Image (cartoon, rainbow, N blue to C red):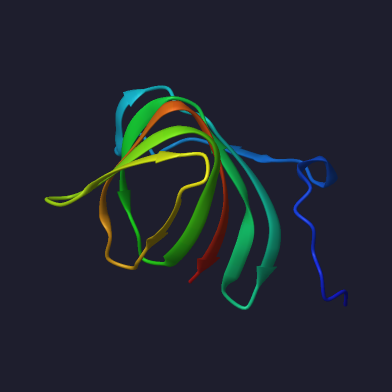
Length: 113
């Protein structure tokens, strides 16, 4: 096993997805996910989404760093975060709110289930 892993989107085919229909608020967002690491409840990769807005509920812990674009993450009854390139955020289990992609957004992420 190698002990280093470079995130290179051209090395894997992205998974294509979208928010569940019952969570969609507006738009027709599409997701592309390049998952580079999947081991022992840990996932790491790059995620990209086109404009739209949907409800999110987190059962897992996620750290991410925005590489490009503009998104707004709003906690239910709480804070609003405008996220642009260079911003980082941690979403903890139990987080509920909305994710709105204003401009196609790409982030790298680490998720712990």
